[in-house]
Image (spheres, rainbow, N blue to C red):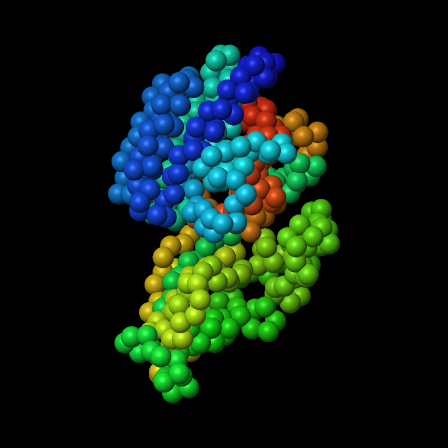
Length: 455
């Protein structure tokens, strides 16, 4: 590994400059006007992987955005690692809250600032450069494949079919993913569980046009008022989701499991201070760690209707809408939850309005065994670079396609992310610490070395 470390040290400034090129491409999958940017980003990555040492690197079309597939096969009999990542990023809204240009990355206070700096361009770039370092020094101990998609932030709809059609091409021993976070640099962790996701959009419709709120107010149902009342009925006063049947498949942790889960370092005061909030909120009877890791949740992600521009306009809007997500825990099925949500939301609507409910996307929860060879290799690699054994950790986030990989390809995924909570992914002012980037670069080659030796 000394040769690899030397190569990384000699080229680390170039690695960052190349990452900046990648970050400048506004590959926002949720917005159709960025469709050309998705293609451009995929082509850029394919060229970069070829230059890094891949035997082949292709931009493969799907029904949506293309998948970048690359590989280097050193020996068909050797173990094979499939690296998964995504090159699409979240929209930058609200734009006014950014302190830097979202797609003009800068380094400040030891961090890279820009959309995608962590999620997931910065993290997938660690893998590309670790791969390059091992290829350049002739130290790659196993076969490596890359599968980089452009739809993770919108549900990975096209990737499921891509996997079904390319099972042989994607055959591997483990899927390696860095799209998650660690507890901290002082307390490294490996994500061994992800919550699932059900994402809905609802619309409440009233009159056939916007109405004057003075002439009609108090006599005609206001869809925005009704929507607010309906949303308020989704979660009760104890923080429990009120949808009938929602908790039917949720397994309660035993007292011993809860005790072990809450051993992870966590200071409530620091948590509140980091978010500038007066107090936490959630399901009664559970800690903040439990609420964000092993309990389901429901959140309004966006809500709109009526007049929202500058000044005043006194109207009763003809309709109001909201986007609502539910994070799920093991044994919950996102399709069942979508059906339960739809039935309940419609049942609580008054006769004065019409309701439309649409399931936008979702995915199953995922659990990774801590006794599989890849986990043991990652544990050793992280311990070597961080100086302490990593903790297994259940993340509150979701990567819906991960459970799809297991179902379609029959391959487990290993989640070794190097993000931190302060990276503000999905938010304005996303960033990624240079130390996190370099720790990842140091850890990934060690993982390959240890995994190649695992029985």
